[in-house]
Length: 101
Ligand code: HEC
Image (cartoon, rainbow, N blue to C red; front, side, top):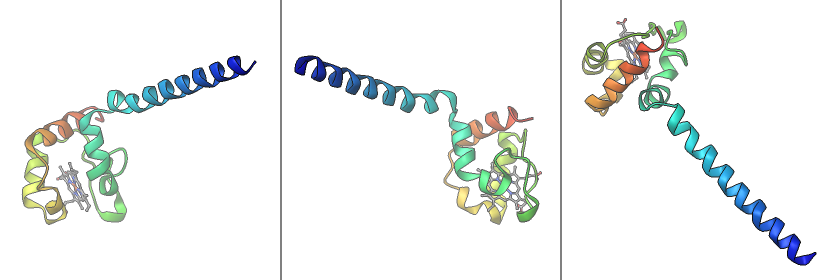
């Protein structure tokens, strides 16, 4: 019985580890880099669905291209904190925004 108990515990621990690994690996696969950047850097002002927020006078940015995003980052004071985004991140953002159209 003791043996069976520890075996059970061991397999429960194994199952828990596997389940954790599975859960941890999922977001990386289902959420693209552009979506992650959008949520972290843009959603607060432009809304979770990129449709814009009247409260902060931000427009919808659905379907905005990399060029449009790059321009706003380099010219708009509201986006001054985003100058650290790389060209690749801007491209990924545009790819994500294109899926929201
Ligand atoms: C601090 C709030 C804020 C954050 C954060 C923010 N924006 Fe904006 N955004 C605005 C506001 C307000 C405008 C309206 C024009 C202006 O003031 O620059 C705007 C305008 C834009 C426009 C121009 C839209 C148009 O139709 O002319 C684009 C493109 C844009 N944002 C993209 C982004 C992206 C991409 C991010 C994240 C990387 C982002 N913004 C993060 C507030 C924000």
